[in-house]
Amino acid sequence: MRPYIIINVAMALNGKISSASGRCKISSDNDLQRVMDIRRRVDAVLIGANTVINDNPELNNSRCRIVLDGNLKLSGNYHVFDGRIKTIIVSKYNKKIDNASTLFVKNTSIEYILDELYNYGIKSILVEGGSNVINQFIDKKLFDEFYIYINPGIVLNGTDLFNLKKRKIIFEIMSVDMGILLNVKGILD
Image (cartoon, rainbow, N blue to C red; front, side):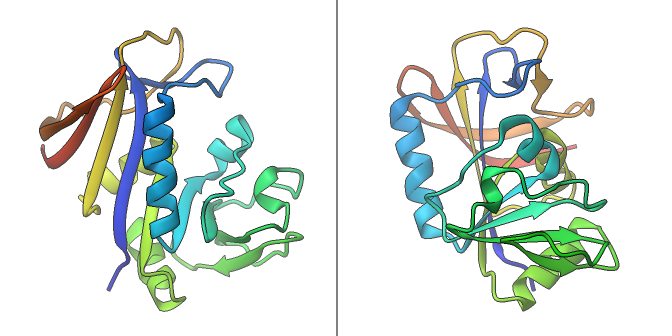
């Protein structure tokens, strides 16, 4: 069994989800409110260690924060370790970080991790990034809902959402609010 997975990402018109310097605001205020509503509905928000390093997100509108950090490269100097909300570090190293629980995994495949998180009691997850993490879910088609907010702006020298594989995406346009919200219905290789 695995948790129910919702992927959500905001990207610029040219496919970038962050700038070269890291964090940049791509979502509209209304889209951010939609994301906050999803965060309140799910058991946890999942991000990768690179997102923690580059963006230092707080993720305060969630019940639990999950950080994939296979090599345990993070220290306790980030917002996700502020102790305000439960934080779970998923790693192949069993080392303690203040204000976080470590979920030790022998296998760092995303399928194995999801199975372990389900057994840990996490039944629904919002995956917010970054690109490497999102593409792991896309490559294995491990999602139940997938939303892409597209801002009409351009971000230079940033990180692309999709890896180099060409993909056919089946989607429904849900709304237009200073950008476009796509509800991804399927991905074909």
